[in-house]
Image (cartoon, rainbow, N blue to C red; front, side, top):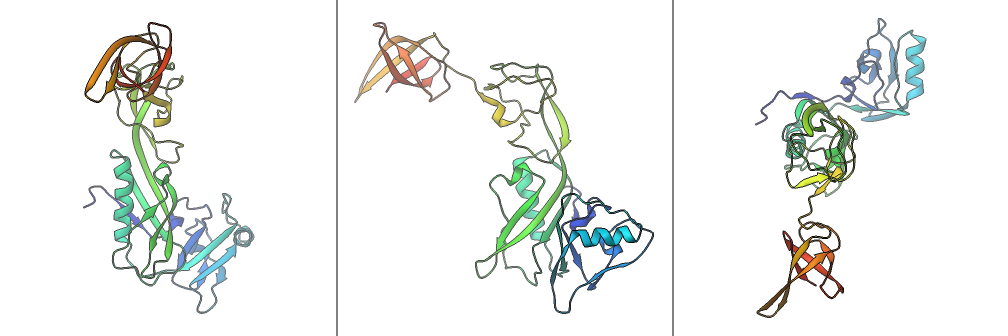
Length: 287
């Protein structure tokens, strides 16, 4: 059961009332200004969808010019063509629930205001148990495309748009490379969920440190952190050499730092250098 208010919207044009969208649905084949959900004092015809057509593609400039001639404002943000698709009586509730689960599984503290789904082309039916399949990095953006497989195994694509916010970590002060994540330099902040190059963090991981310097109030993502080393450069390490059931141990010096299971170089007492795998704090195994 969905535990928050979810506005189920079947038309992508509800976002940005006076902004031209890439797709609209229609019941009446005579498309008018009001079908675009635009604030305009006049009511006028834009296009008539040919008989039998369930989908119709139109040059965006023609629509913009029609509004201009009727003294109405309609903004355009890089839309070249607009697609009108016949409204279907299909319920997409199962796809809304799957999309909801997909995003909340990646961001448990996400606050969803509305979720919109729009099919590519007219659909008169859905398979018995449709499964929404997202891009591998779909969780990083609030809009995109997913697909389902129909009964013939063919892909049917859908656009989605999510209006949501997430609570994630930001730096509370300037941090330097190798500084550990802590309550002293991090704070939680709610921001709009739009687009990220890597996944934002929502909890402080005590075994992590900053990979690079960041200014105050910077968003912290998983690419900007790394595991803290458990072996430091020039520190003494216990070296294990395993041979069947025999284990020989001796001390050496690490020539570089590393995290668990990293391969590093160590220097023995005779100054010879060999490779070893980190198996614990200040403990390595000869390779």
